[in-house]
Amino acid sequence: MPEEKGLSLESIHEELLEQLRDITAVCKRHSIRYNMMCGSLLGTVRHKGFIPWDDDVDLLITREEFTRFREIYPRECDPRFELTYLNTWTPRVMNRDPEKAAAFTDLFILDHVPPEGLKRKLWFLELHTLQGMLKRNVDYSRFGLKHRILLWGTHVLGLPFTTKWKTARYEKVSTRCKTGDDLCMSNGAFELMMHIWHPSQFEKLVPAQFEDVEVLIPENWDEILTILFGPDYMTPPPPEERVAKHLDL
Image (cartoon, rainbow, N blue to C red; front, side):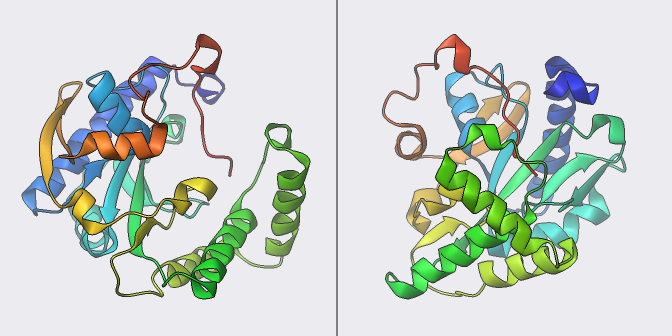
């Protein structure tokens, strides 16, 4: 939990807003397209900012735009921040100060998906396997027996390989398909990756307010939030589910 890492949730939100201001400024300066996604898109629409118990920021960006962002951002970002893969398959903007490492901005990348059929199934299987190979410190109590076995098996499978090799392999597989209208968040965790998106869903972006930062969201945010969270997404979950959730590494 955030408190164990030395930051309160309020401090994490303050740090995340600093990151978001920096990222959006660089993107605006260079006309790099991005949009709020997942919990951050829901927070923008439902709360006009953070979901009160959320502890990260989620942005969506196409592979083409991320290629530009990866080149430009390290040169122009606030010296406090860096773009890093850390020890996971998801690029993140983080503070260089280890004491603030609990606060990070995830960049989910839209990649082309292979045609439906065996090629697509094998592609997803390889990415899921690589995710398991890269995960560390897994809380197995959160999963059923089947998923525990799969997580443990892929973890063991990944032990002979370096993190550098595994992350490089992950990017190579993610970018294998170069064309087509079917897209997915290739670095989304497990089931999040399985949503199939289309370019038209993110074609038009509109400004919105996230706390005191102006951000971009898809014009058809209702359709996207319904896909991600169901038709009742404007209704907050019961109190016992209002907890911060980090990705297990």
